[in-house]
Length: 542
Image 1 (cartoon, helix red, strand yellow):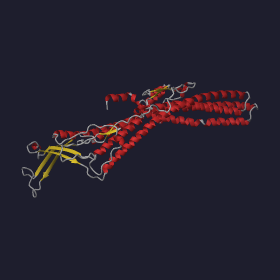
Image 2 (tube, one colour):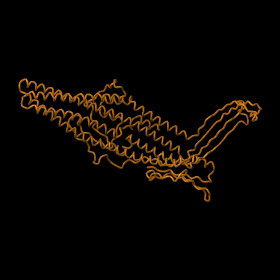
Image 3 (cartoon, rainbow, N blue to C red):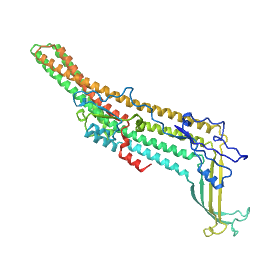
Image 4 (cartoon, one colour):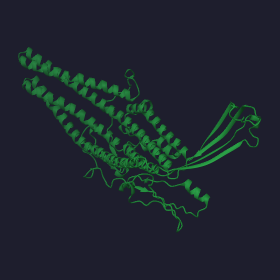
């Protein structure tokens, strides 16, 4: 996964100098890099500097330097061929009705960027567009990405020398009782004007800045995939919220139908009581059943109102600016073909997996920075300027000055601080590696759960359709028998309770199929990589 780019010094035979250790600087020898960070990949040829190399070439080699620490390599995808222990069936079971169609699993198929179009709902398409345009979470994620990209550009500036212009002017009085006047004229009053240019440069000999840029670039990648995760989460929440609203509307409608049935039965019983064919206890029991059915309606209406508020907020609006779209199950079409991406592609498509990969890259680059901090730091500075007692004399001979300086700082002892920081960076890499593997496992689990749920949902839908139709026939029969006085009221009560529950189960089963279909698209990554803005960014380069 990771390789170490080495470096060495070599000298002619008999030279008194010896090559310094790569990890010199302070304390005992540093612990080696984790095995996962070094094995399996060969590094580039080591750089060599000989004592006989011409000075200019030596200086150039020093400025070019080397990069210490591990070089990051993208982890290989899991070596699995599927998401479930048993092969996926070609399709799910089917049931009668528009919500009971068989769904086909299409292996190796990719996901469209606008996957919600597969539900063939114009209100849903419109609401998703509104959410993408007005929800504040997307601009916040975009701003975080811009900030990370600017930090990368700022860090790249350390590759170059820094230059600053300086101008100092002063009016002075010489204490003639102590020292002679500084001016050539002997006047104790004199002026001094000093313009100068300061240049400093820190050669990136051991790649500390290269690793810093690499770390910041990985952080920018993390923010980019966080933006994609925000996009995917927003669109998925809108679709899931619309399906939930449709489910609640269906449950409200089923409850209202049950209340209507209960009301009709109560009217029948009251007529029969007036004719002396039904006891008062049966009428009272029906009144209680009607009241119980009416009691279940307000909580559903409350959930529906709260769901409307949630969808309005996702669209970037205040509750008083409620969205115009409404959703019911008849307006959402069940997607027939379900694309199932290759397992090897999942790690490239899931934003959370790509975030975890970026975090692993950050940890890898931080190891290099920690190693470079223990190695010598070279500083080059230059100053050039002019100092004169008047503007007219600034360019006369003898007023110019310049300074060239170089410095080398090698940490010798800092209480093993740098050593432990390096070990901490290595431990951070181990943590990020484990977290990456955990994220990949969770991603595969999400897909497997969605695939299993869809198969189970189809079975539940088939059973719910059969149950609802049987309950409807049973209720119709007992209602006729009750009207003819051929059946006791208890049989009617059982039949109507069975039918009401069957209606609710059918609504919930259809909504579950729609919701788990959307969950599969989300688990597979949501097709964000097909968006036009993503393709444009790839075409234009980083």
